[in-house]
Length: 407
Image: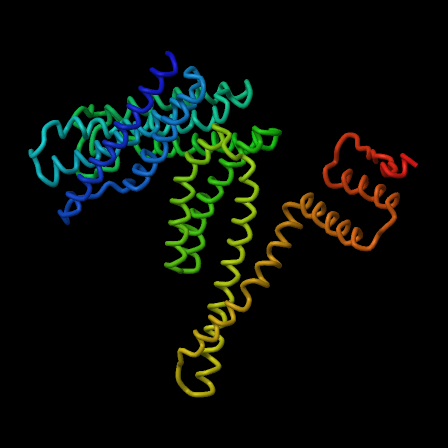
């Protein structure tokens, strides 16, 4: 397939995926008007995957070799999850919300019963082959074949599973075979386990990578860390301390990280401004920690001042909120500078030491006038900050002015 045909096919898959997603959201709105109709629980995730992966795949395919599977995996993942979402919403609408209003509702329910399995399987292979289209090593071949086998077995078993369709509740599989087990939850567990292992392979690959490939993998690591942090906040920390607002913060962080995964992968594959990832990670660490500290200080100050005012005046007052806000405003810049210095010392030690060395050399330039001493210091600064394999300094000898030469 030549590049033009590959681009046309990729953008056609993207357009179909986005069209199915738009129709799915329209059907979702219609289904929400019926209070007794179940809602597909993963409609947000399906929408984000279809909208995130399909355009990235369409952009990647023409810019790399059409034989490279990475771009096609992006396109196929977006399309299959678009089909999954559309099948679910279509089946719910035509079989439960408005029975018989649209044709082939049972076919849509059957499609939904199994298509989500290969959709998860493609994510497994995307993680295994990212970023260059090859497995991390030959030792991962057995895992790739095992994943393919489990995806095929899972899809066939779900296509023929009796009883209700997984995720759709009261809708039953029209092609279910009585006597076969319905192991939808077990298959889902297997798929999530395969995705987790394949994603872990990327973290292992990053530890061994160098140069451009290391920065490519760092983009994925950044987005995945955001998503994992959101999961921890939303489903672990918030449940432990009972903070509803923290659950929403975690959920938003999860969605941002989730939509950021295909975008970060696309940036890494296209190698567009790879070096900005270090600045992005630095700012995320600084402002994330700063926000957390300011929130703790703010709520602590509000609670403490409320207790103080209640003891002094016998009633609550809004003055505590005002004072706490002023304290936060006064602490913002000092805290930011201290946190930035802490992050630089802890995670960017080499750059931090280089900046300190340059700062000390700049201060010496203002006081030192001996050129020979400065030349030795300059060579030392270059060797310490840039760490070249060899460094030497050549100074042009002084030449007499033209008038003096004539005399």
